[in-house]
Length: 157
Image (cartoon, rainbow, N blue to C red; front, side, top):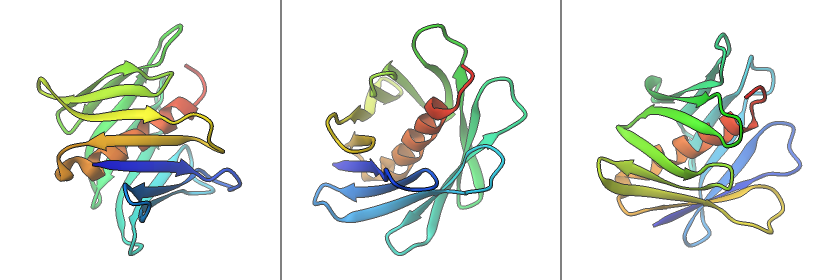
């Protein structure tokens, strides 16, 4: 199964449309305009909030907490690195490996690959593909990708 995330190019805030394999809108992501740090809300197709990503602003490196139904489920911390982005992921029991700079990485649950994320080239605005096999991983994979994208957009490291 796949999700396609397309960033809206002409928007005042970080805004993404998320489509299923058939091209139908599945989720919508919108950032708060006047928030301290990045705060992104994820809505389902019926416009119900299903998750959020919040940047912790009083930290030396970019740190993002992922919430589902108002409950913190984990966090992503961007590590200091000279050439390629690296992350400490404490979320859903997952770990991620791969080329974060090129947006081609895998997410593992134990020894098994649970999710593959890649960036599609030659699109107007950022376009990411999330490939997963377990439908239960769909929302968590989407939240992880949005959090890593926010961390990549945060300057300083």
